[in-house]
Amino acid sequence: MLKKTIKHFKEYIKNGGVTYLEIKQIHSEKLLEGKKVVITGGTSGIGYEIAKKVVTLGGKVLITGRDIEKLNKVKKELNCEILEWDISDLELAKPKVEEIVKMFDGKVDCFINNAGIYKFLQYYNCGIEDWNNIMNTNLNGLYFATREMVVQCFEKEGKGNIIMMASMAGIRGNDGPYGISKAGVIHFTRSLAKKLLNKNIRVNALAPGITSSNINPIDDKGNIYMENLKGKRILSAKEIADIAVFLISDSSQCITGQVISCDNGETLI
Picture 1: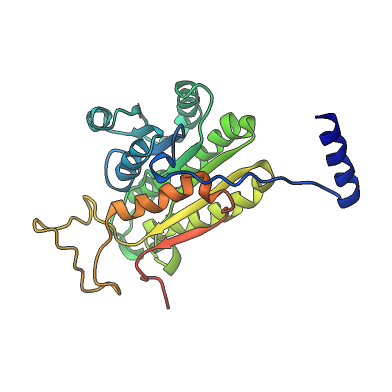
Picture 2: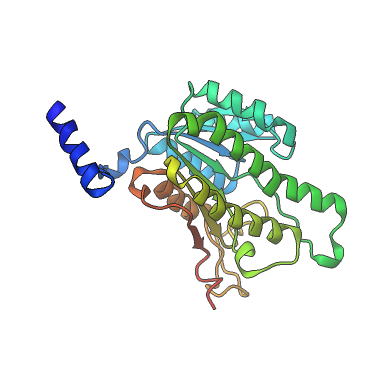
């Protein structure tokens, strides 16, 4: 052990630094084994599908949401932890993250900012109340919740993984509050990744296209065709969940500061 330490010190003096990397190759069915994952807004849509995949692949999940009945339903379905939390209430960020950290015995591997709301509004018909509701949920709540997770958990642990849920609307431009909020998420993702780069905390974002949900339901026959999209179909929440799984896993440990478009080519020029 002493010889190894001396060798490393000599290398450090000679080269100015030494870094060692452990490459982890994990069987797919155990990809997330032991991972503790927190998902805001996990009772439906993309958040629910991510939670389901994490549990299936051996991880432990805590989901948050505003509707306690929906939370209890998902808890029974997935055997996961739940926490009632309206992320748009900015004063709750600190106490709710404290509660999450305690529930997971001080260790969270990945924090997924999925909670968000959408309302079809454009520049000329957006009221102040709608603007504030969307911004407080999609951007402001995300900002302060993330900061609390970094300070209370990831910096203390010396590592962490943050995934933001952006949108193609934040990439291609949109004058409504939803698109502007998601553009803010994208900018925040890249900026925070730089800030936390030397703290072993990764920050990435997914930017889905139009995805099947309560807002964009698939018809009774499972038809996902949509004429006005380049790919002529809406996406499945399960498709987005598969990409999230990769970012949660140690297989993506070299990826940070990236916004991954998963929109079937919608934002291509």
